Length: 611
Image (cartoon, rainbow, N blue to C red; front, side, top):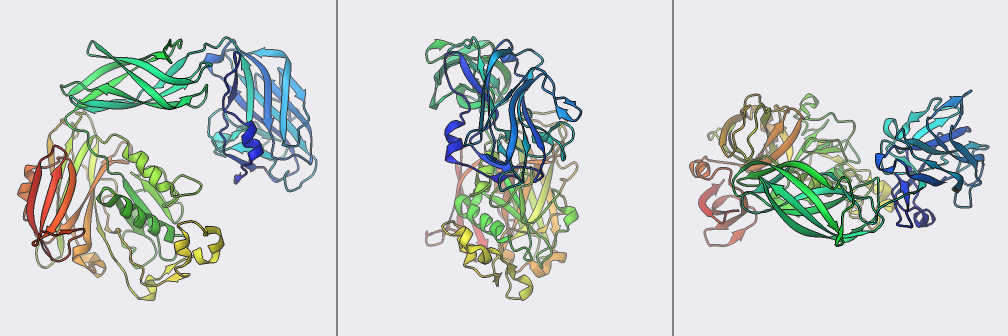
């Protein structure tokens, strides 16, 4: 397990790149560090690999590395090798090896007397040392970066890792803190267009594409001029970076480029070229890229689905509850959450119907992607789930989705659901499927079986000054906690086969119907007015959700014809007013006027009754 070790001394010397007299610094490390080791007295060999074809013919003039351990080690060296090989179980570099003494900060530095010319076969740069004694530093002697790169961390040790292993890929998500100085004929102005995704834009409007770029020149990039050709017509534009892009052969930067979307819907081939940098010609050989530009009738709003896995027995799970509550406050109807309970009175969805494999509680996923923490997301600290949700929201959704639900009759034993799906891009041989989940808000009980266990009061000192300190003040056992977005019925985790056609037609509305039988969850329907249905479109080829929608369960189906008349249009806002004309945030029992405003400026009003 990596242990955090950020120090001002290290941050002060580690730079990803630096502009110079035809010299760059090449490294996979970022500025976030941790320390790690095998906790054994043994020899360590650590390396990175450089195989960038853009560097062929350039010269490595110096090698630098940084250790966490500054005492209790010996025989420290820096080296280059064409291959990672062992002789009698000892590392045997085949280019050069230089004995180096680390300074007080653990830095190893060596300038090569005979610079090495990089070939097309690539090269390994590394360091070695011997652990003489175990102390507080040598149990975890390696300083590692939390960046991840396939070439960033190779490891061999004399006792624990007996063969060279790509440890950053196979074991730890980390890279070695090693950098090399590379000298060569680098142009002043060179910007590679490394990635250009498929583009979507509303017909006849200005669209954007997030292009990945890399500065392979010596001068920071402040502004670019670019051109693009669609259907034989070439247009040009400029883009100014908020922060200049420095030289970096490893990690790409991003540029949000504006393009004119063709007025006629359809798929177009597009070639985009970065022509100039800071007013100078772009000397890169990779300055152009091709992709497809999809001109669509509308750009669907992507509403990501957050699914949380929790249980009242789980003492750390209150942070998942806290995260759902916060996301609802921040984003209202744009946030869609589902909470799957485990081992408590709300655990009516069996684990076999969980949409992802859960390795622990609390846990979560966004659009059924990778498992993450329901509060921290993929971050080490802070409210990272919001960032993960925002990242998902920025991904293009291929279809709009609307869902409407109502009780079939006064016996309240079944709920009918109608959904409307409209794809904006035609696709053959697709395998999209609809899935539906019935959820309940405001479930609670004073029964002790519903008590939420809470570990946070026992660790209150760790959370002082953070928003999670609110959990520290709630007691080690929380009685009568109100739970929202609880999954009651979720028996179609993989989606319903045949619910959407295999050959998708653009702009054609697809109507689907589904019925929930509520007999098995009657005891958990504490308030029939607090139920809602989540509908989702699943790409069964990836297992991921591409868009979702939610709708409250009404007491009658009045208005469904009006819904059908404006199905799948993008909603801008929804407002409820009572019969006295007062706006209400969340209608309770009574008669209200629901006013829906759509993206195209149209407005629909209808009278609804909440029981």
